Length: 352
Image (cartoon, rainbow, N blue to C red):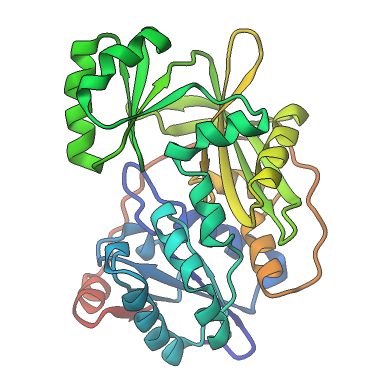
């Protein structure tokens, strides 16, 4: 590690057809003039073929860490080993499944001198898909009516309340639009095989889709936010193209949602605007979205602000950004010597 540098560890480095946010976070930090010449970026991956780890000129070192299913103790033990070698200053977890784990060991990591900017576990659980409808009902936030299904036999009776089409969702990810009870039965089994219980059944909302990337401080105040309209979607509903927009209603709604969640740190709020102009909150993700580099180029480098806030550096809220900035996701092949991949696979770490 460079002398007097800040060592920032980032997770979620897979960058295939549905890229994780980690590479985008690292690119934003490389973009920051404030950190130029004083930053070391460490990647944390589950397995060697985490493609973003090999993006040229971004990561200084990469380590393999346990999958989330291994639990808190295994993760903490591995991070202690890595910290002994590389002296980490800040960790930015980039996957929802990891955020819960890191939040659960915040105190132990703080004792090691490693900083995070995350809510407590209790608040992270509140934004889970199976709890979000009740949160919205209590707080006056438009969220599509949602039922928690214990078995497929409940679909027919619930469809009377929701009408057709409706949406079935896995508790962690995935959504399927269903136009009949028979189709829903098939999709229910598919979602159960992929994600387990519970399966969520939700009223379908038609309209335009929007995302807001956001960052809050330790008092739950909004420190930065950028709104984006989705203009290109994959078959699974993920945005591969979008444009920044100026919409103060969306920003204010996001601030209200995160304030009521008592949120700390990175977040993404997903909305659909119906034909009457009403915004419906569809999801709150506990990390930055994959398109976050767009926000940095538009004027709000939220990963930089995350690092500054985690370290206790003086900061001011970011209020403005440029509307009309477009992102389009592309795929690039990097041809490289296999030695780095082999070293990571056999030793659990590699330096670039």
